[in-house]
Each structure stands twice: as C-alpha cells, then as structure tokens.
Image 1 (cartoon, helix red, strand yellow):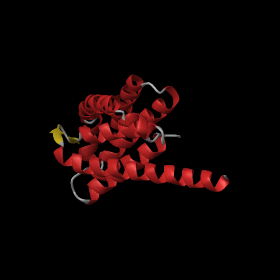
Image 2: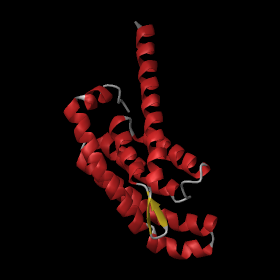
Image 3: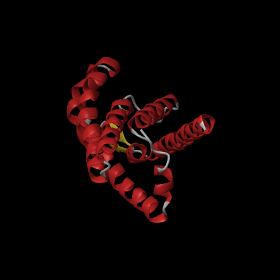
Image 4: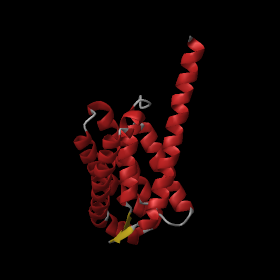
Amino acid sequence: MNFERGLEMNNSKTKKLCIASILCAVAVVGSMFAIPVFGSKCAPIQHMVSILCAVLLGPWYGVAVAFLASLFRNLMGIGSLMAFPGSMFGALLCGIVYWKSKNITFTLIAEVFGTSILGGLSAYPIAILLMGANAGGIAFYSYIVPFFISTLGGAIISVFVIGALKKSGALNIFMKYSTT
C-alpha cells in the first residue's frame, strides 16, 4: 500500500512539474507580445501565468515559474531585470492568498497588488544598483504604473482562462493534483 501511495505522490509531483514547465514556456513565449509602457515592457501573459500557477500549483511553484520565465526572458534578450521583481512578488502573494482563501477575486487583487506595488517598489533599488543611477531616478515613478497596467491586463486575461477551464471541467482535473 505504501508503494502505491509513493507512486501516486511521485505521479502528482511529475504532473505538477509538467504543468509548471508548460506555464513557464507560455510565459516566455507570451512575453514576446510585450507592450512598452514608459520604461517597462508590460507582459500581461506572465501575470496570467502567475495566477494560473497560484490556482493550479500553489505559491512555491508560482515563484519558481516566475523566476525561471524571467531568467529565460533575460537570457534570450526579450526581458529586462525588472521582470524579476515584477513577476515574483505577484506570484508569491497571489499564490499565498489563493492557498489560504481559495477565492479567485482575492487572488487577482493579490497579483495586482504584489506585482504593481511590491514589485514596483522593489524595482527602484534594483534599478539603482544594477542598471545605474539614471534608471534609478525614474524607477520609483515609472515602474509602479506600468507594472499595474501589465498585471491588470494579465488578471483580466486569467479571468477568461479560468472561466473557460471551469466551464470545460478541466479545472477540476488540474485541482485534483493541486495539493500545497
């Protein structure tokens, strides 16, 4: 019996890793459709992915997907350093909120707040330390608003995606393996 339980648990982790990998790829490919707003590349698909990770996989997978997607985007030259704080704070906050509340509306709000406010504020020291004083001078004022626009777009897209998953019954299948 323990052997079967072990196989089931490994199978669940494997499925979660596969879903996380697919969502990471969606975030990277989706970032090619970034919208420049002020000094930031707004990639709403990344925020949609963070919300889907929160609902389907949990907060830690969400942070890992956000980090890896940001890393791949930077390595391929299609992202900026601001992708790290912009995606990881939102992914963590919305993941924790969904984990504790199971409320989609609160999860969307947490993603918007985590990315735009916490991510935007943390972009300021990153811009100063890693991108130079010129970028730091504008970071405080010009990252919160673009992050807000980007994450709001991602939250709206995710409402439709989650609605379609619920309607098709696929969300129930994913939730079967979503134990955090």
